[in-house]
Length: 122
Image (cartoon, rainbow, N blue to C red):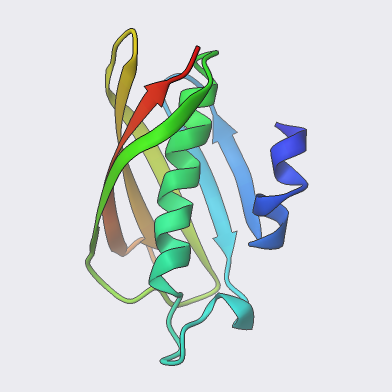
């Protein structure tokens, strides 16, 4: 995953922590550039974190995939030193893969839950 780590992930302080077929885990290091005007992690960045963790999870299956649909529920403000996102596969078929991700703050509080559907382009 080295190529991905040098682009979008590096720019947004996202670190890949664990990747396997059962689980993917990424960490977002919060900086002042991560925050909205209210001092919380910007909702778009939280969404990107969920999309990133599930996209990496799809990639480990050996298929190229693009996001077909995504829905997020913001439950608490994103604050602290970092956020952690994990993912699990709900259903993987020939052309479509549905995943769920949970995003936690550095005190293990659930701050967002996301469902993402990917389309396999290969």
